[in-house]
Image 1: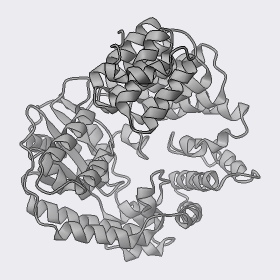
Image 2: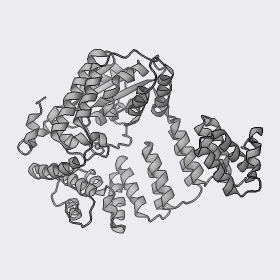
Image 3: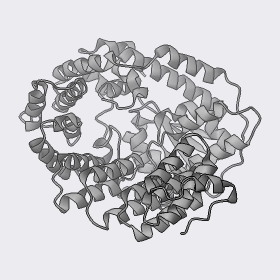
Image 4: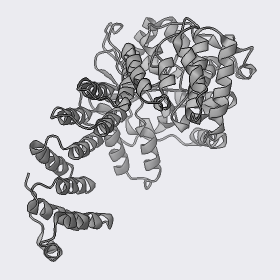
Length: 522
């Protein structure tokens, strides 16, 4: 599209730049933008686009300002017009992808990224930037396809192979994981720092103590200069391997070392956590701020992490019309924003609901039920039902000692789960989450339902059938539907047939972890 001529009011400003090179126009536009004078900056970029028709930077400046000022359709039009003539322009594509993502149009964002790489090769840094964006947006299959396309075209950068391995792990392509990781490790001595030991440990259940992975993990720990993060993660990997081998004493020893190291850097505050729980329990009921959503319903799978949330969400997503969006993380952001909104105003709630709905519903397929399985959305049940009175909350609960042990086994990336490195802090979180769940269940009995992990794995068809009936899902045999990408610690387990061997698992560790016995046996 051709930019509109600048307004007459900006004529003196533009005359001062007459005859100046493109760089001067761009710098002036950026300076005005930094000063907050969006209208003046827009005038400069629009005129620059006319004077320098081959300037991609002028179009990027225009598009960014359009987006900043709420002219989203205009921003998209500017970028698409430029990309029609310059389909290999990476910066314009990345900005377009970011704009589309903000609107929840993630399929369109992925399509735009694929078009970029369909018009010729790009350097490894550009590929990695694209892969990281798509992975962050929950489009692991698209990110993996771009990685594999680059590798098939001859890309040798070990970072690309490591990214391809990480994505293959999330997609359940376990043989490819090992191949890609092996390539990265053979060609870069620092590749071990790219979370590869934990990735390898997640690929299978170890049956043989002579498996080469165990020797590799021990060798990694002997390397000089190894980062503290990788040393700790490798200890978690060894703990997991020895647990698979039913060498529970050795598993407990490695995990105790790993958790002690991780806990030393913890930012989690028990006092802050308890204060937030007490505030939620004392808060008066929220009245619905908005009417029910029409034609669709959000489903929230909540609970303490490692209580079966991934398993349940994955199985529910096999029903027709159900889409599992994984752990979105948007509600925490919206809750903080709404806490600052003036009381009594409806507009901030409408804006928050619209923004979240766009990220939940997206543009990839028709659906009627949309799952957000962020476990600690349990903290936001009151807000959820104020925004969507027809929402349904499924609370997963598991035997406390089994939950505690499973949490203690994990190396988490999110500091929100730093409590998981101390069994006493884990016990606090479990106890408080149960108190909060009982509170929500009493306050919202028609919208809140608890499902027990032991019942789910013991009789999955019965439990899922009862839950589907409560949710109003169509009757269907969803047992053989394929799983999507899984980015949590359950990446391997959630792809296996439902099993019961994790029930009562804590008993194997009672002799080595006496702290477990301080957690209530329920």
